[in-house]
Amino acid sequence: MGRPREIIAPEVIATHIAATGHRIATDYAGSELVLVGILKGATMLLADLLRAIPGPVRFELVNVTRQAESRGEAIELSFATNVHLEGAHALILKDICHSGVTENYLLTQLSQQRPASLEIAALVNRPLHRHVALEPKYVVLEKVPEGRLVGYGMEYQGRWGNLPGISLLEGE
View 1 (cartoon, rainbow, N blue to C red):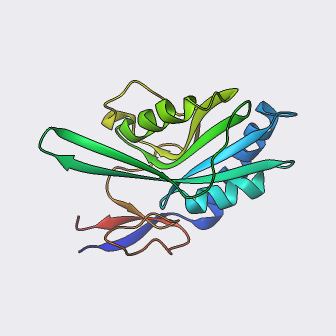
View 2 (tube, one colour):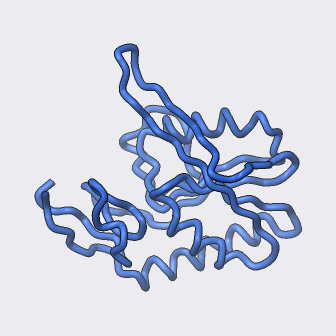
């Protein structure tokens, strides 16, 4: 297992979260807004973004697990909270938007609740890894180096999620 090397300091993350929160607040001013955090990786993003958006904002939590099966991948969705989105604007929060498969699955499932709008906000966007045609409406950190990211809630094998900044796991 490699060693983490910080590539984005906590202060830089905080600055970008504040700017993203301001954009979201402006875009959804006067509307009911719900942040839907995907466990576990987006928990820090959810907590910080929630505090960066002034006014009434609700939040919900979902857990999405992906398992490889003989006939492809199976995705299982479980709600950690009683998610109710009808008529509200909702943002799905993801730590890293890679393939887009998980996000696409959630967009499909949550759209059945008839929200006013349903978009994605990602801490990091990795469009070169995309398998599904979608783009996050909000990306907090642009141009993050390739490699295994840890810290700021993102774990690798149950470790390093507690790092306050974002680190690149060297030797992986």
